[in-house]
Length: 199
Image 1: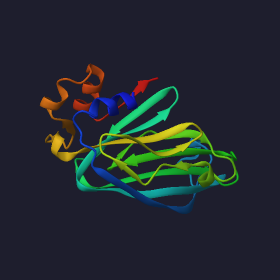
Image 2: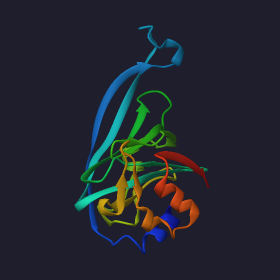
Image 3: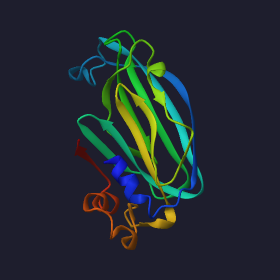
Image 4: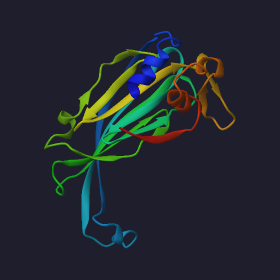
């Protein structure tokens, strides 16, 4: 589906250079081991390591886009905030320090919009297990930002001039550009803020 969207956009979106830059940070926090403990102040507690990659999408002109998380069998998607010359992009791995080793929750966000978190295998070094995509891409293309345990975080960027933003801050592809797109692609680019699709 992601490739179909990119192929459909190829005829209407000129490839404008995009640069994606970011870096990893690490922090720890203490949390309850089970939901039944919430608000009790009583242990047992677990130490959580938060590994975050924080970055931005830079372009010579404002862009917006759709972020995807391919977590088989589902494909989750969310639209970014309205077009900007510098959109935020981030993802993280959240894992227990001494509990459930080799497992983590992978989360990803784009332009102040978030995808659902998913459980992934990460081995003893979560950062090493996470493959990063290229720093450079272009508008209208499907770009893999990060991948871990066969779960891929992908974005498709579109120039702001091709979009219309409503009063609710939700953007959509302009009607005159969307009219000839396949029905399912048109629906995704002109309706809704987020959703999930089957494989």
